[in-house]
Image 1 (tube, rainbow, N blue to C red):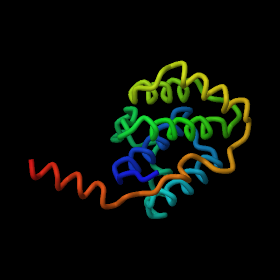
Image 2 (image 1 turned 180 degrees about the horizontal axis):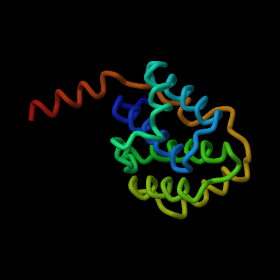
Image 3 (image 1 turned 45 degrees about the vertical axis):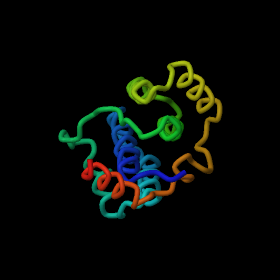
Length: 151
């Protein structure tokens, strides 16, 4: 699935916000964030700094990301649930935040709870995460900006 740079940024930022919800970042979460950052085209130094600073960074607004499509939001939430279960439990603040992402993106509470149930039954990190199927289209955001400036 091709996504714009803005969606890639929202995906990465959204997962950063998620991992700080339980006030700790495990080694597994940090490793996953580095892997996802690389997959989304972010530089290693940027990813390391973002992970290191997310707990104390008060300037990052804690709002659920609004993605350009419901399909991308579904992928994000599935990955978010996988992240949340790296310590074998979905923390209530993580669950609440992921539910708010679902609702912000037009997904139902029932859909979210069904996905949470699937993730909890799986009990291990999937070999392939949803983010692995994403391709960043660097020209997409440039086209959108050009189209907006022509109007």
